[in-house]
Image (cartoon, rainbow, N blue to C red; front, top):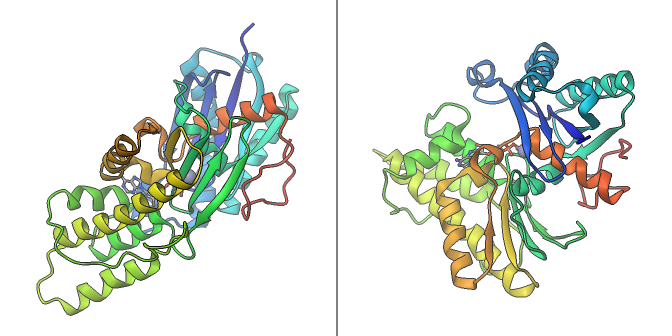
Length: 330
Ligand code: KG4
Ligand code: ZN
């Protein structure tokens, strides 16, 4: 009998569950979004996020089984995000998974949220050819890494301050765009001209990033310009971000063995970033691997697929540095 993994993700403001097969097929996925709750605050309000997860979690799990026409007897293990994320939000998912695992007599696998993003690219279809360079760009993190066939990850460099998603969201707020700003900045950028020379921090050396200076440059420009054109600011900001990201990806691809470039995390939903990464990969003759749009931002399917890796490879710990949490991982 085929068996599946139930993935659960509650690290931030989405209550999500999905049922995933070993080969990455997603049988069903259900997400309860909290955007309406947080929009009035211009960002995620952690206490309200935890409370909303509590209300939505079990109905979301019920619905994911109904949508797949399966029962818990079809589930081999539960994969749940163990961090990083908002602790109150994580606890709702972790406690729910622990209780269900205990009741159903199946293992519960704590999955690193970032490893989930890394695996999002193989959902529904195996895309990555190893070795690969990975660019992870989300709301909480930004880094480059090298990944081999066995899932071994070597960290190459990350941001010294803001993540790319954070920079997008903060610029979105400066431009009076509603939360979450990232996708709206992209949309506005398409209508503007790239005519403001925003800085490209740390462009000429290494694989580290810094985005707080760029964000400050946008804020200063807004303050000192009499009649600022928001669409030109958005277009010039997006251009600066993508220039930095692609320059670093090019450097990483040239200095490391790689058959693929994998771009994951919420910002991988950006059409501008997807297009620029496509151009870079054509230039360097490597395969571009992107998650399908709906799996770029937070979801439970990626957590389910990452949990399969833990089951198959018997990984004892998650090798992504700096983000290891003191929670036991199977
Ligand atoms: O991976 P994700 O859903 O959550 C975290 O793990 O942080 O990423 C969320 C981030 C937010 O900052 C959001 O604004 C950004 O991804 N984002 C985008 C786009 N869609 C989501 N940024 C730029 N362009 C987009 N289309
Ligand atoms: Zn995420």
